[in-house]
Every structure is written in C-alpha cells, then in structure tokens.
Amino acid sequence: MTGEERKEYGMKVTQAGGSGLVVITYDIIAKYLDDAMAALNKSDNAEYRRCLGLARALLAELTGALDMQYEVSKKLMALYIFMNKVIVRACLLYTSPSPRDI
Image 1: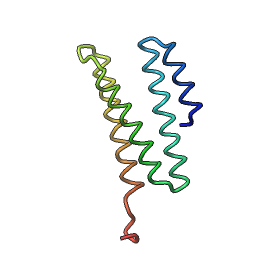
Image 2: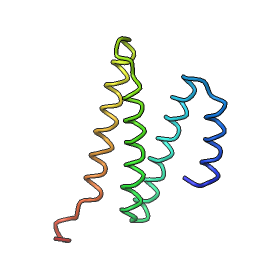
Image 3: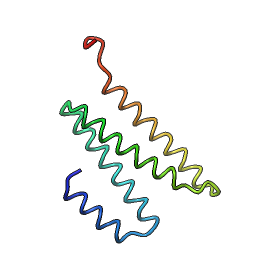
C-alpha cells in the first residue's frame, strides 16, 4: 500500500461511523491481498508474507471486535476463521521451499 493510499484510507476512517469502519477494514484487507499477489508475481516472498501478515492482523482485529451475543457475529466469526485459514494456507504453499531447493 502506497503512502497516498494510506492517506486516503486515513481520511475515510475519520469520516466513517462504526459499520463504515468495518467496510473500510474489508477494503484494506482486500488491498493487502492484492499487494500480496503482486509481490508473489514478482517472486518477492518477503513482501508477500508481510502483506498476508497485515491482512491477518486486520482479520484478528475484526474477530476481536465481535460481540458474540448476536447471531450475525457468530456468522462473521465463521467467515473470519475461514479467511484466516485461506491466508495461512496461501502463505505456507507459496513460501515453503520446493523439494529441489532443499
């Protein structure tokens, strides 16, 4: 994510309400995942892992903010767990050394 994109998201955050912040967080996660794919295409494993880690950190924030007394929170928790598993799997699949590298 570029400095300009950070500023843009910062402006959005200052103007957003509660549910708007969740949507902005989703947008930022999507941006980090896009950045991870770009890094993967450039064979930049360090940047790839960094972007995936940032996406996972935001998912953890969303997970921690859930109020489990509401049914929608239980459904969102299942979604966040699934997303985290997919990101972890992607990190393991594309950053592990191949057998010929060992």
